[in-house]
Image 1 (tube, rainbow, N blue to C red):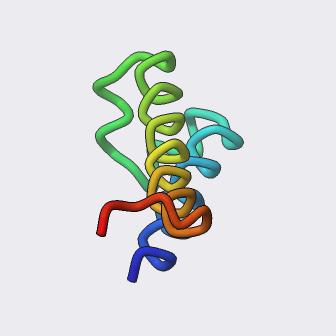
Image 2 (cartoon, helix red, strand yellow):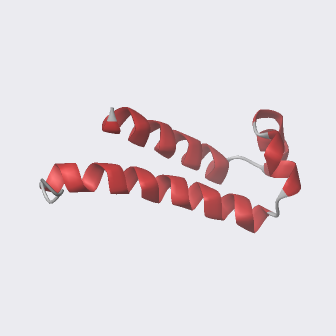
Length: 64
């Protein structure tokens, strides 16, 4: 389940980072209400969230 959520976070974050704002508004109407910097910040947090889900399991440093 963690891998699935991490993949979804990554995909969503990369889409918001790589596409122009006009295309994003079609899929994500909430983007209209936020400045581009806020949208990029949210996309960066999504990618970091994906990393935070995968790294502890991959390095076996998660709490037991």
